[in-house]
Image (tube, rainbow, N blue to C red):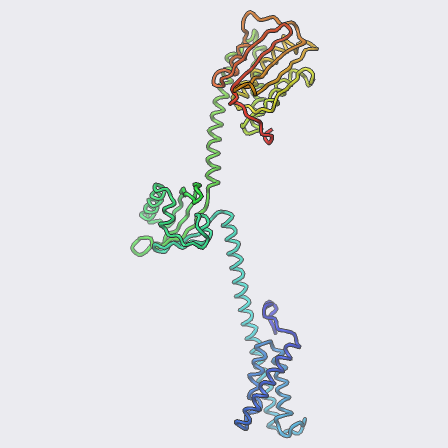
Amino acid sequence: MSSPNTLSFRSPGLRAQACVAAAVVLASAVLRVGLERVAPGVAPFALLYPAVLGATLLVGWRSGVIAMALGAGLVWYLVFAPRFSLFDRNAADAITLVLYLATTGAMVVFAEAFRTQVAGRTADALQGQQALRDTASRLSLAMAAAHMAIWQVEGDALIPNPEFNRLLGFAADAAPTLAEIEDRFDPGEYRRVRSLIRQTLARGERFLEVEQRYRHPDGAVRWLLGRAEFRIGPDGRAVGSLGVVLDITERKSAEERLRLLAAEVDHRANNLLTVVQGLVTLSKAPTIESLRAVIIGRIAALSRAHQLLSRTRWVGADLRKLVEEELAPFTLGDPNRALISGPDLALGPAVAQGIAMALHELATNAAKYGALSAPGGRIDIGWTDSDGDRVVIRWRESGGPAVVRPTRRGLGASMLQRALSGPIGGGTTFDWRPEGLVCELSFPRSAAASLDPAQS
């Protein structure tokens, strides 16, 4: 007769129920003996009814049935005369016993039904309370993860929740006033929010969403997104409000980074177009095909520099990798044709483009007329960043045809001179030695920095 879904109110075992039944029947018998001495003629079953009812309500219907049976036996053998007799009874005694059994049986049924219903409702209430606690806990976790807090205003009184206090830098159990919170906003910011509230209410609207800057006690400026619903009184004025506050500092920072990135992309695109325009303007050749090859080669050099820069999100290009990639098409994978030495060094975007163009011009010249045009020729290229405030890259050729100093500066030399001049502040020097060209490329130390291994 117990409900299977009321686990918290499950009846105890049969032994425990029998003990409870025996105890209540014994107590009623002792009480009856005492009352018999005070008021003789007490009805034999008078005190057994509450005993049966109590046993059923306490531990279940089995205990009530046992109490009912023990009470019937107690009266039949000990109270009815003649005592200790099984069959020597009159009809009135038998009818009294039957009425007792019927009455107490009905009491057991109804008491157990009542007990089960109460237990079920109590269990449902407890389960509902637990479900509410679980929901509140999940909501609290979700709001904490989203940096969201709830607040309520009644009149001039603020009713925050602990997450609201933590979000604004108060103790979790604090009760900050509206004036205390207002003091933490920049004056102009709070006046702006107040003005938006007045405009919203003047339009007859109940909902407002606003972003605002808030100065946290740790000194950091946070961005908060507030959403509020106003309760409007009969006079049309707000009498209270309920809302949430969300910390959107990370989102605003991401938006700012995207804005800066978009501006940087525009800037770099304009710079690149300017470089390409100058490259095409300065490129000359006796035939269209040769001019096409010159322009494609120089644009390819720029492309390799851009690929290196993009791998590090335009933080810097590794000079060693830049040299290796610019020389690879000319050395055809033979490590003996180009010996590269120098410390790890990162180049800024502008100087990386200039070095790429300069290396391409030097390698092209070496392949046509210099060391790379002869089977045994080679190039030694090294750099150092310890010469004061400048970085010097030294290009030295050997093993090629004898070098004769040119009588006039060609287009390649002009391109080399322009590659690092201008805003970069670099320079180029040539030493036309008979055994091979020596060229030095230099630029300010401020244009380079030690390369972060994580970016390589």
